[in-house]
Image (cartoon, rainbow over all chains, first blue to last red; front, side):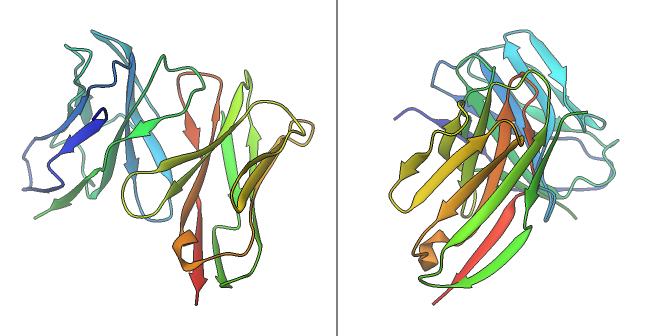
Length: 113
Length: 109
């Protein structure tokens, strides 16, 4: 079955630690996105990528980094510079990235120890 | 700055009620407005609207776009407890998709 797989479902970060959230898709979509969801805040865009080896900052990119070395994969690293990382993280993809519907993964809940 | 505003932010109704959720946008390069339902984890797609005044329907859900008023509504008739969710809207038109804060709908039996 085609879809988007995020792992892990739950992740705990110690202070000063970098953690990486995985996102893989087998839909052959060009565009991929990372969103952060806090209670009452809707979805806020962290990073997006429309093509391999290229990505753009979203509205809240500080403290995060991404890579897009393969079309199928768009991992997100939450660095120690992100002082308030506790949130629900959603990865999504779309066919080309312009005004189309998004397909979402099941999310990763990140908490700080 | 692109902005999408949803109202109300929270709504509690009884089964069988009809609800109307609102989404307004302040955007340039508008191409579409999309609605999603988020029950637990992954939001699922409901509607994509591109033309003003044309209603889209799926069962008890319907939605319409008003480009003149820069807004869209999502109607749910004869609500059921399974409709309890967060309803998100977003506008398409650039690669930087902007979401509203969502409307949390609770349907009580």
